[in-house]
Image (cartoon, rainbow, N blue to C red; front, side, top):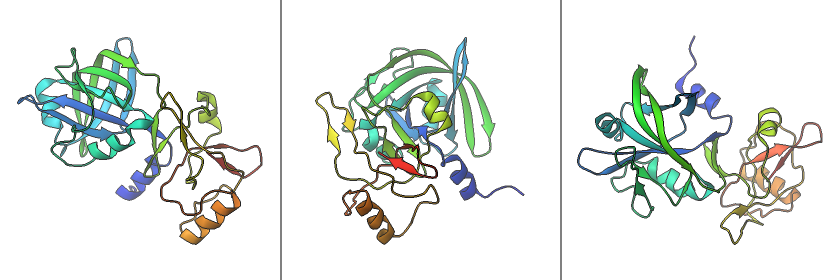
Length: 246
């Protein structure tokens, strides 16, 4: 028996993924865009990638018409942009600097908040359930020296600058769980964000849901108990059955 839509989302939201904003220019010359974490590399030669677009997306007609789009992988500074482009507003680009792509029919490149950008031309569209899968050739792109924004368990979180985890460590040891830290967060002169490190605060089991439990855990980690927002990047701890949050 197939899993429910909620179970499906929980499965694919249980591990960290990049957050991207897909942008395109519509037939009237208006920029369109939406937040997406269904992006993957397909081929290096030729350079191809795949994105998933909801059939109800307001950006889909622009992608169809121009057969071009840009994938803006968001930096940590793009947390607000990820929220704005996840909505249905008509003026999503207000307040965000962007430039038209010279190779993707003017698709907006979010220069202020992007970690990397892939400028694409559509090669193939495949209907799959409630989405269209679009395979595209990457004709241009750039990478900015910034830290990434990640998505996990329904939350978007900063990847900590100065505590960069290697790819091998992410793949074999790291887990993404809810941690509650609000104190000790700083921005360096270069604009990077550094996050506090806590001692071990709990066994690696299901995250607590009550505010009282969260406050007790914060107190044990000498962190601010009046948590107003969440940071959820964690790495493996040498102590068996424990997670250390940052």
